[in-house]
Image (cartoon, rainbow, N blue to C red):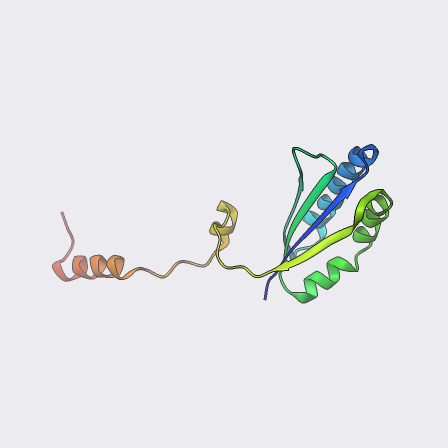
Length: 132
């Protein structure tokens, strides 16, 4: 079962550029090495650039565990941890209620079940023969 999680934190103003660069390196690693990390987005607040918010979706608990134990996470933590302001990263778990998938997610999704209307139209065409 998928795991939906966020992480939010604030860093010292002097560390913003360093942390942004570390995020880019970290996410590149995730893209190339963590197929079980289905989504990882890192956002920076517009009105307060010292605030960052990460959204992640892990395929399952095993994928989340592999992510958390990776050398890349430890490296990323070594960059941002000394720069934190207002306490540690706040991680929050969520349950998915519904959503709008990206085009890429739709392309990978299994074929959708036909609606009753679509099925009825197809059935009426086959009963009456081909239309000309």
